[in-house]
Image (cartoon, rainbow, N blue to C red; front, side, top):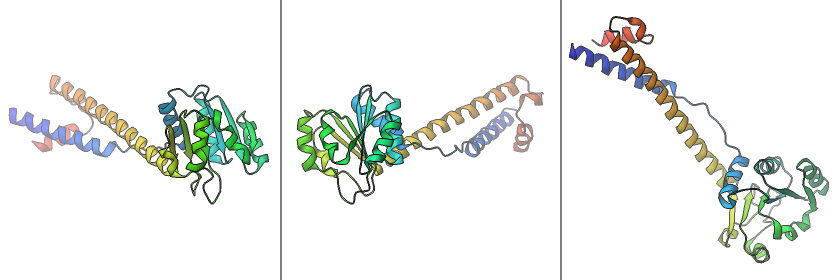
Length: 227
């Protein structure tokens, strides 16, 4: 009888493992550039309340990223674009204000976060230009989100004190990592649910050995074949 019980237990454990493998196929999700930008900003500034954001280039991803920051408490938006009309349109949508494209550097003294996405064929911000601007800002932390392809911001600026630059590749890598972690948490929760349900069923079967109703569908046939 002991051998028979062990056989049944092993068979049931095998079936649980098989079910876990077949049923933990988590649907593919997505993590937006905006949500990653918010996460990074909150790590750097702790709170986004009253933080000022500048959008350089009025593209769709820039707009979504700006909206994500506003939703978490960012105070105001300044929009700069080569087309001033387009800058005005986006500024109205974001309850911000538009400035001429050649004026954006003058606003740096009060800006905390920059989202840049122009179609420029060259860097619009490099270390030589940013270094004196950072001194004007008294080296307060500055988060630069460069989602342009090709890049708007020279990677060398990352070597300046209190400058945090993330380009689109960095953001995508972080998003992928978040997604993997989320899927893993979901899979673990799913596995725990399957195991918990099976344990309840097995305990019920032990208490009522002559009742098939205590077993999940298919358990009785599979365990009898294992004996």
